[in-house]
Image (cartoon, rainbow, N blue to C red; front, side):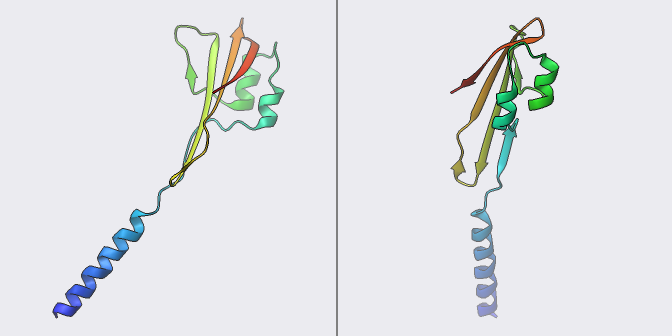
Length: 101
């Protein structure tokens, strides 16, 4: 009887250890394909930018002429570099874009 309990305890312990090793991949923000970013040109309406990249992750409430797109991906212990794109506007039209580091 003691051997069965010990065997059961080892089984439960090994299952717990193996499941603790797996980490769920996490994507956050807007996926920014290089083709979509390249299509953003000065003079383009904001609506077209949101159609290409989606709703910005951050909109500065104090300066409504700035939209920030951010994308991060974490898979287990590996973290890919964060992508950041700033889109600057005036009168609802794109003035410039900057890849932020």
